[in-house]
Amino acid sequence: MEPSTVLFIDDEKHVRLAGCQTLELADFPTLACASAEEALTHLTPDWPGVVVTDIRMPGMDGLELLAQCRALDPDLPVILVTGHGDISTAVGALKDGAYDFLEKPYHTELLLDAVSKAQEKRTLVMENRALRHELETQGKHSPLLGRTPRIEQLRQILANLADTEADILLEGETGVGKDLVARTLHQLSPRRHGPFVALNCGAMPENLIESELFGHESGAFTGASKRRVGKFEYANGGTLLLDEIESMPQALGVRLLRVLQERVVERLGSNQPIPIDIRVVTATKSDLKKLSDQGLFRADLYYRLNVVKVPVPSLRERREDIPLLFQNFVDAASKRHGRPAPLIEPSLLQSLMSQEWPGNVRELQNAAERYVLGYASDLTPSVSSASGQPAALPELVNAFERSLIEQELGRQEGNVTATCEALGVPRKTLYDKLKKYGLSREGFVPRA
Image 1 (cartoon, rainbow, N blue to C red):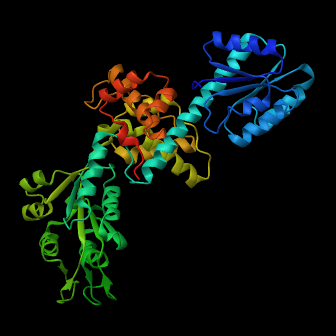
Image 2 (cartoon, one colour; image 1 turned 45 degrees about the horizontal axis):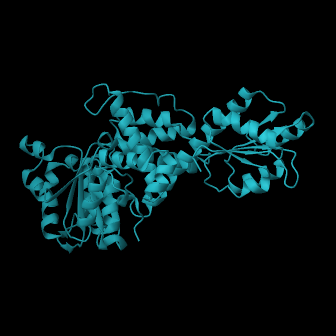
Image 3 (cartoon, rainbow, N blue to C red; image 1 turned 120 degrees about the horizontal axis):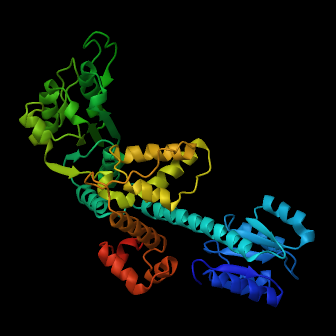
């Protein structure tokens, strides 16, 4: 069955033939059924089409069929066809979830218009479901969502480093998700049963950060009324993330260097060294080497941190992941605010993929929040490319096409035949597209 099939149900043969001919001539592939019972044999929760049914039929009537369709899938559009005497019944059915109704005899244009709008809605629902399915599939394996080569490479790097004791330096722009990368590394590592402790060095006042990191004894300084355990000690057995390490006061560099090298910490006001067993992950949005050359960051600390450097890609480097990420953020915001998740139009996704996102994933998350709350007027096309120049139409089309193929392959779990049917393309065309975008069906097959 083709993706856009219309299921046309009427017990009168000449009505079925006329309706099917009208729809087929308008390029709506149509399947005719003489009864509601026959129609139900073709319907599934993921059936991608539209139902057009007469109300008055022997056996199961159109209203009963509507109820069955609603039970099967509340989002399945059902258009009721009614005689003059059944208009009040049809109006009541609209309250029960019918998409629309047509009064006999209806004009051809009315049928085509109703089916066209219903099919547009159904297509939109199915595309959003495909995104959610992809989210569910990926979320089982990693909180780092995406299918682009850059994010796949990042996942592979983390998997390779997870069972080592190496300290890690994460480099990436503001908002790319360095905290999530560090948490993912922690969850993949043998330390996952220990604590994950994060400290933003740029958010701490300089006079407090030393105590926050190393802890202090009672009476160590004015206001230290009782002993405090620092972040290094608190993270014992787990992972410590020092975010915005470039904001660390240089005076603390010597103490931090000793902790990194010797894995011991001394609380302020104490001479007792305390052994610690931690992995230290540092994160920066700056070029530490350049800062070091300028004397703005300790060179010895830079070389100690720069053991394993992991770049975290910007959103501009993984535009094809934007639909998946946006859907994830929309679902999360809808749940948080207790509002139904709005459908996401393909035109909106294309607009999102064309924007620059200087705030990266965090900015996209905020945009999804506004979309759920109904303040999405700023989500308008801002067509530019990664180079900052206006993006050419082929660039946008290719990015959007790749995204749709990835979504459908994910929904079909790598099944090429099912993907071809869903996208309405020949098998050879799909393989050509996979080669063009560097994709492989094996990457979408669920892992055992």
